[in-house]
Length: 403
Image 1: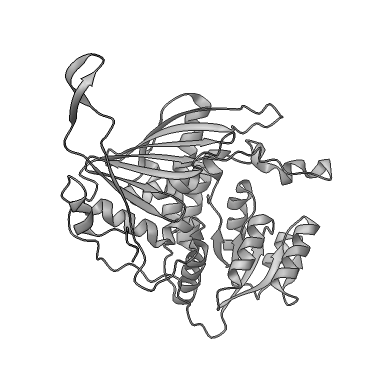
Image 2: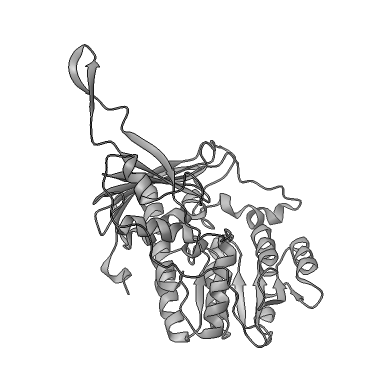
C-alpha cells in the first residue's frame, strides 16, 4: 500500500473529523475469467475506433471468441477482420450478420441512434447483447427495451464499464459508511479541447462519420461524455433523478447542431444535487468528479480518488477591515489517496472487467452489474438533461419511467 494511501488512523489524525469504520467490505472479484466448454461466440457490429478497441480487449479474455464483424464502411471492416483473425466472417448487412447461427452474443458499438433498433433486432434473433452507452436515444426507446429484455430471458448489458470498476465500489462504500458526512453534493466535469470532427473522403459519409455533430443522431457532450458520470452518480447515490434543468450552446459555428458546451443540474431522490459540465473548447482537468460532503470531500479522476477532510475550526482574522471575521479560504484538509486495490493486486482496465462480467452472465445466466434497468435510469436521465436544455424548462422523472 502506498505511503499516502488511505487508512482510518492516518486520516483521522490528519483532520478534524471522526469517520466511521475502516473500509473492509469484500468487493466483487473482477478481472477473473469464466470457464466455459466452448466459450461464447461474439459478433461485433460497428468496428470504428471503439469497436476496434473492444476487439483488442476481447483478445485478452479467454472464453470470448470473435466469429463475425459487421460495418458499412469498408476500411473499418477490413481493419476489424485483420485484428479479429481470418476465422471471423465479414458482413456489411446487419440482417445477414444476425442470421449467423454461430453468434451467441452481439456487441453493439455503433453510433447512439442505432443502439435501440440494433438491440431490438439482436434480441429478436435470440442473441445476448452488450450495447455501448447509452442504451437508447429516447425515453420511449428506453422503456420499450426494458420490456423486451425482460420478456426475452437473454442477457443484456450496457457499456457503462465504471460500474465494474472497484475504484467506484470503494468510493460508494466510503459514502455509505459516512466518511464524508451525512449530506453531500456532487460536481462533475468532462472537458475536451476538440471539435469532434473527422475527415470525410466522400460527402455522402458526412453524417455517418461525424454523427456526433448532429442532434437527430446524438445528444452531444451530455450523451457522449457526461453519460458516464450521470451513470456513476446514479450508482453512488443509489437513486434516480427527480428533476433536471440545464443550459447549453454552440460556440463552433461550423454547421453542427449538437451543443459543444453544456451545464446541467439534477436533483436525486435522496436530495443530493449534482452538476454536470462539459466543454469542447477547454480540456483543463479533463475528467473529474467531486463529492462535497460536510465532513470530507472525495475527488475522483480517471483511475484514482483522493479524500480531503473538512476543517471544523474557522480561522479568525481581519477581512476587508473587519477584525475577528472568519477566514474561509483554508478549510481543505490534507490530500489522502483512497487505495481500492488489495495488497499485490494490479489495476484492471474497466472494460476488461465489464466484458468478463458479460461472459460470466451469459455462461451462468446472471444479471449484469450494468443491466437494462440501470441502463434505463441513465438513458432517461440523459434525455431529461437534453430536454431541459432544448426547452429551457425543468424536466421531471415521471412515475411511468420506473417500470
